[in-house]
Figure 1 (cartoon, rainbow, N blue to C red):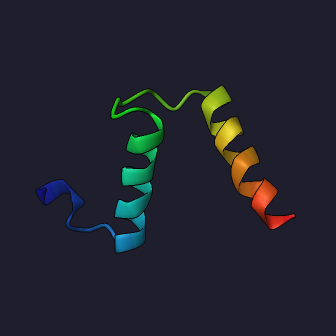
Figure 2 (tube, rainbow, N blue to C red):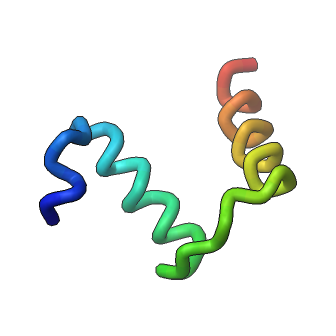
Length: 46
């Protein structure tokens, strides 16, 4: 995939992860979805 050449391995892994949790769909990043992902990530820091 030529458009992914400039991405780091970590960035590519995040894209794979997002595809897995979205059941291989490409949903738009709504405010609600972004907030939910942030809550999940922040919960790990606490």
